Amino acid sequence: MKLLEKKVAIITGGSRGIGKGIAEIFVENGCSVAITYNSSKAEAEKLVNKLENKECNIKAYQSNAADFNEAQNLINDVLNDFGNIDILVNNAGITKDNLLMRMGEEDFDQVLEVNLKSVFNLTKAIQRPFLKQRKGSLIHMSSIVGVKGNAGQANYAASKAGIIGFSKSIALELGSRNIRSNVVAPGFIETEMTEKLPEDVVQGWREGIPLKRGGKPYDVANACVFLASDLSNYITGQVLHVDGGMLT
Image (cartoon, rainbow, N blue to C red; front, side, top):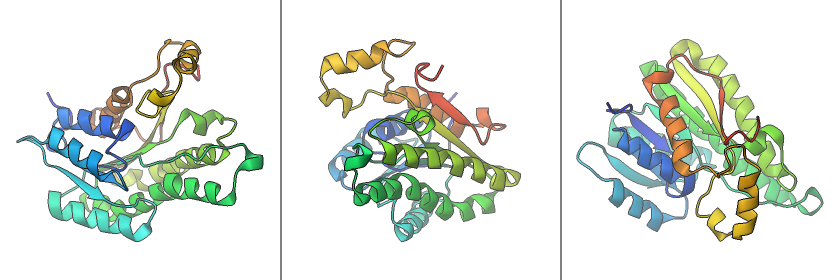
């Protein structure tokens, strides 16, 4: 049984890393997928070609999630191309790490705009179609850093903590319309970005995790499948930690 059969999902920032993993697992579970990218066109097109099959519709859209009007246009375009939308995964995000004493205003504002305001933009844009069909699953990508903080990431932590507060509020607002809003908070996930780090540094992080390994994008993706599927019909306003026990 495919858990997302005949469903349609939008995954922002879906061409690389965790977003790519979510797209792959969603398609495996029978879901048609619209992925967005901002600058990584080649990666997005490569992923679409890889995932194309007879059962699912796969399409990539260039869209800046941090732009309010572009978010609205994206929802309209996906509705025109796919007919309906069942799931929104707000995954787009960036980092601009630095200690507070060295962090510029621009670096703070840009991280908040891309990571947090994008969640407002897309959720606001998809609210009307979800209300009309009286159902929908919102999945917002936070981070362990948004729960416990991290030195050198005050901007990132603020944006990811904001996502949790936003999601819980939307769960309260839209629950009566059968629209669910949940958060996934990954821990140390090994992606293309972590491959550039020294192996001894990565191994040191692994040793500090109860499960003694870093997570993989599919670990996060499987959590998203659960929250997107009918298996989680009575779950909203929650934060699902996918961190190997780091917060235990």
